[in-house]
Image (cartoon, rainbow, N blue to C red):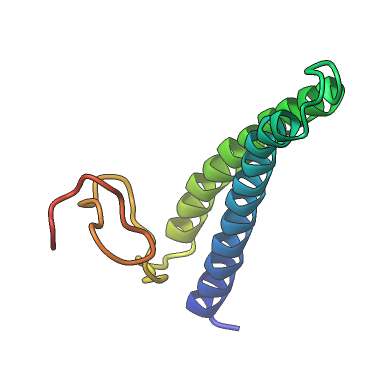
Amino acid sequence: MKRTEAARAGAEKLKRAEAAIDAALRETAELMGLLPSLRLEAKLSAVLGQDAVANLGETLTHIVSARRTIIEAHGALFTVRAQMGCGALAMGDTDKTGDQPRTSGLHAVSGGRAA
């Protein structure tokens, strides 16, 4: 396997790992937000399910920590890529720090101007 192929394979796997962590963060946060609504609709005591809410809060803390450390790993792998003598790799439609915010499409941010 050539160095560029190895770098591209690693970058693709990293991108999927980052997306998986973001999906876990999103799903867990949505569950955390849903529980109080369900409790209120069912007219249940706030005491009921408090342990589960606390556990989800702890889970969110761990996922946020995992997100931070995979971003750090991303930076470390950037250094490895340079040490291997590989240039920049185009890996799809995700933005990098300093890019103009997208105003349309899947990764759009609200409040931006039309592209």
